[in-house]
Length: 426
Ligand code: UDP
Image 1 (tube, rainbow, N blue to C red):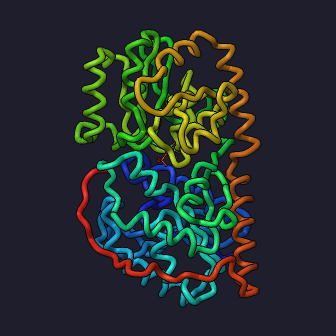
Image 2 (cartoon, rainbow, N blue to C red):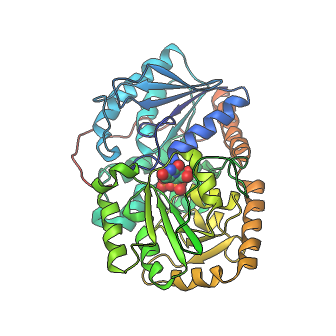
Image 3 (tube, rainbow, N blue to C red):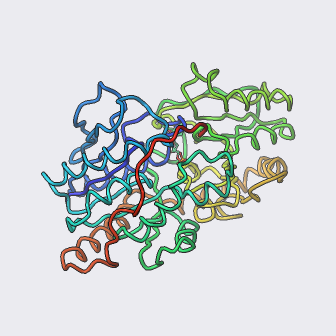
């Protein structure tokens, strides 16, 4: 199949760890590479955020990144991109008129918003993956949510207008149904992990960080945004004198001083008297993650909410147990008492005591880690993910070929005009 991926802000070629570069980038990159290795022809359309980017750049054999000019060629926070989606959509329509794909897979709501009018009337099926939902973000972040106001309405429209929705976890499926999306239109296919690179033991990859004096190592990884809940891990260090905590994510280490969340976490560490055992490493290349994860006794995933969460799956692939809040994708990936431990999501919870109990039981940690690795091999390799997504494409293309869309195509959302809206915060 000729497959067009649309990922407006998240380029598969971007460096990871900054506020707008994380799981979606990894997903689009690895899914595209895996599908290309199966003989499909992939083009990933992503916004040009630098004048130096070529028109097209190779991603893998059979997979290319097409840089779409929409708005100024410089980085723009994703919550300020809406005003450029009309131009993005026109570019897609032009590209697909010249060279129509068999199927389009849009990632994130704004990609869907751009892809929907560009596929309208062409018979090309549109598969949508949201990666995160505005309704959840608004509920969890309240006034701190900097998404454009249109987001929830557009997502609910897209959910019904796209040919198929690929949700990444059952919690997301429930939310989509709550939004009025027919359950029959949703297929749950999780995100994945490269189980060859992320594996137990000590691999010969970069990323080894010498230990401090501490006996145990705790690791937390993710974009440096408050909703990842790194502050909970920092606070817990006050009752974990045998441990050091490494936090990976954010800008590269040299620029961490400019990062508001990094400053907040450092202040907090000082306030709790644990600054000598909490190390912020900044954003690191994905290639360095296996060695770091392997060096950890436990991986802490303490997000307030999490649409999927690739990090716990990467930890499990490395045979490291995960302590995770009981939210979102973690509910599917981390099995309580089997591959890790679930904690309540908010408030003064028992992170410190749970971690202390696990650190005192190396045998239990080994068991949880082994079960995590087995679960990954069974469910979360990119090949499994590609199987599930490919099946959705095949069905969508077959339906389109017989002229029987699952639902009547709805067309572009009524009354939605891309507008610029200056916003702050992540
Ligand atoms: N990641 C990375 N370097 C960093 C921070 C994160 O390679 O400095 C990777 C991490 O290993 C994972 C992804 O970025 O593969 C984050 O995905 P996740 O789904 O956990 O979070 P999201 O970014 O989608 O909120």
